[in-house]
Image 1 (cartoon, each protein chain N blue to C red):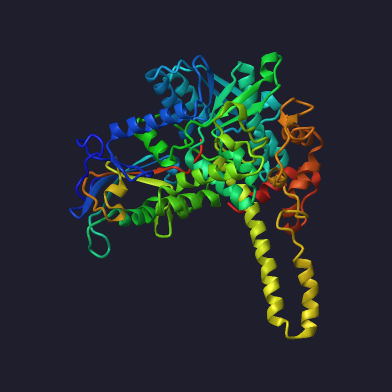
Image 2 (cartoon, each protein chain N blue to C red):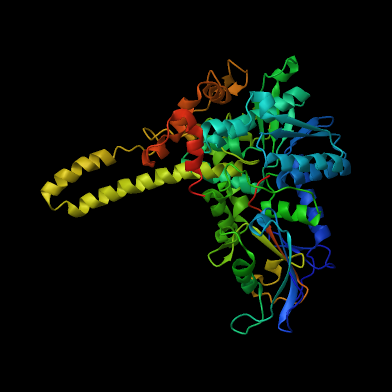
Length: 110
Length: 453
């Protein structure tokens, strides 16, 4: 969206595909500047990013199509810099400046 | 976490965690392994023979796009000697199929395969837009599913192709296995788990077309997750969308169950597929004795597939809804029973409740006497005996009835409008305030259907 607002923000790229972009203003690629620390002061991890996306980026009301029971809905793949997030610690992965986080839905049809 | 090296080449950084065996692979090794496994499926099941002309049922979605890409790669790499063509069905849904057909057109160029697009309008005289205009949004998936089932076969017959491959993946098959299990419909298992099925088709002036149209699923053992990753890492051009007439279909409970199982234990998907195959072998009168691979005993294809979407998985939306309704009715029954037990000390109450109980108990476990809903007919459980397939007297298509499902639906469509609309809208009308006269029945229905979104 914009350049980092202050030193406390980090710039990352978040992408949605496989139909998920429909929930995010039909935009596949979102350049975001997000706080480097979560509300408790801990470094920003993917789990918090997901919450952040839900609250700040997602305009669609159907949150449950993205997040279910507090985590990314089963059937949605998460790639952190091209790697399966399961190889990176899933929600606990600490986001670094310049990271690319991709959410791909496997749930949509053709 | 420190990056792990690829389990195969030991050099590159692993990017993929395979659901099948938890192995960690790099991108090139994953692509290679994925293709090799499809090759293995094709050769061990003897899906193709040299010189065969194969139509790929192409929707522009991930599964059929990956299928086309992999088949092209393997056909060249292993010299299968196949002639591959793309066959797309245009249901006639404006704003939905238009875009995905554009994707298929690009695929045709990218893979240098000839493309044929066949429309419902051309085949049946009705586009889905027109069907929905007439029957409303509820139950239209039944029409779409039944029409599509035949459309690929009819299209293949026209093109002189005897073999159609579809992009059904392991998740789709696992889901179908669960659905049939939950329905108590084991006979159907053998037809739906088989990697090859056949459909007698008589739709063409060409006498050759009376022979069987073979169907197969080369991606049957491929995880949906890996299909999506393959498409991603190979930067394949695919289109994802939801049908505008059933935007909630992908929330089907069986699909959600499969995805939840996968998260807990990824191998569960293939295990369900294997279990389905094994159960199918045990079903009396099953066609599956040889695992569906011996040419003398190829199971007949499903006569009619209800539901929507490019794959069987998309059927679960409406399907599960009717099942959930049934389950909750069963629950009500047992609750009623429980209530009687608790109050049974009081004889008068017992007597009163007894009436209720006798009302409740005879509720059949299968849906009988339920309100006939638009999609209800398509999912009537099959009898335990093997289906006897003949040909539809009208169109010559495979059918266990005199008149095939598509022709029955078409007959209904071609009759007067209000009749259909009233039948399908029946349930809603009960709870609706008195509605405007019959002149605009279908519009009224559309309005009602928009509610639950």
